[in-house]
Length: 215
Image (cartoon, rainbow, N blue to C red; front, side, top):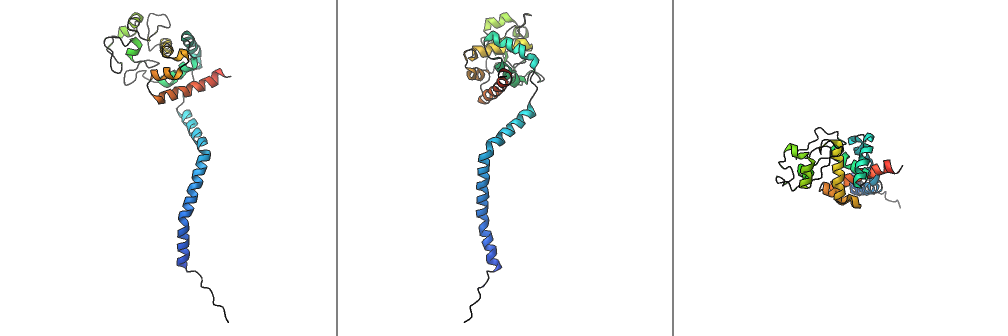
């Protein structure tokens, strides 16, 4: 008795079979991609972060280190913290002009009312105030209204556009708001009420500590 020959699957059935496998293949590929991302995601993120840092980085002004250290020692804070603020606020004074759209002034971007003192009768809101220009840099006026401005170079003016004055003033502010007691995060947050700002400052603070204080 002759065996019947098995019929070969039709081309249509083969096509349906292949089509049925496609979703499974997509799922498998997706799972592999997710696993790969999970394994190497941190490396990718670090690489991207480094690339962004390099793209927007400005050279560290090592000629300023002595001034950072003098101002920081005067107010008992880490000089690398002061340098980090200088980097974030004006990219080491490379921004032009040194005046923000909301009125923050100078190398360390002080609002006039913070520099001169919030008890000044014109101070309210964001702190622009309507302080006469002569009073903005007058140490006696600043002392009267409880501001943070400092005449660092002894020329009779506390000028936010003078680098020494600005750095000493920033060190004074950070010290009085927690940095002198070691509460760096509180001091940074008081300087600019933003969690992202705190993270940015701490990023550069850590970098400068590693580069200049751990060698």
